[in-house]
Length: 344
Ligand code: PHE
Image (cartoon, rainbow, N blue to C red; front, side, top):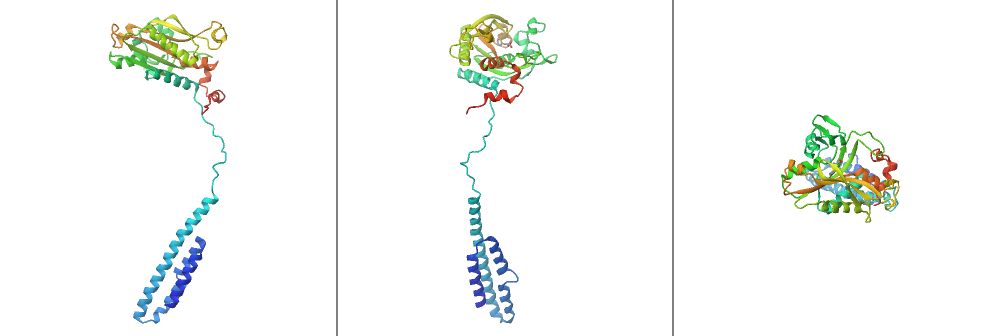
């Protein structure tokens, strides 16, 4: 018994003084293993009486338990200390300046689109969408361009089959929105999106480009509403001093139709290559919604009037940022795109 208690004292002291997990494991193997002093002390059991053996057994079990518990507790302490040591030695100095991460930039067309969306949402418009693969019906028929209409030639079309095409303008979204409204106004939407034409690509033409359609339908809408809206657009996009000028034009879906010019923001009207020395830049097409279109799309033209406009996003971006080749928008050239890097 004395021997057992001595072993215990010794073991507990050693466990207490131990400073590494490896050392602790060695102690565990030594004291609880088969070749340790405990095991040796047990050997004397065979010379004991039955009662002695029982109480010796009890004590030795208790000693084993105490040693095991001491080892387990010490293990936790050592593990924690080891972790703290590791944390301290592997500390990362987060105050060191890191390598600068290159932030992407917003594509100039997206910038224009977002700017337009913000402007028109501020005026109470909502944003509408429509398919890019469109039927002849929405793209042409409902826009008052029946088959054989000469004005179809204005929009060289990429056909998929006889009745399916890549939309040549965002105007079919007008028809879709009006039909959805089932003859009940008001409607105030813009529709920014991709459009397609069978064009030969050059510095100012692309077979795929972007437009932003606008449509307002309500009672008592006049040309003055259209003009005021476009004036605001011009000032927002090209500066407070911009003026607009309306020239008579022709679109089958609007009557009357206008071509809209803005006073040149590059030369303030004095004359420069950008405005071809006229002081004015052609910027978009617009007009009062043709009563025939209203009727085909389920609105009573005696009750409702409306205006519509179609803005070319590439054209606006080219004018605003002085971009001289439309291909820049689609080439993915970082030297071009990085000029629009975010400043935030
Ligand atoms: N859809 C016309 C085009 O692509 C633009 C336009 C839209 C004109 C709405 C008038 C009204 O050329």
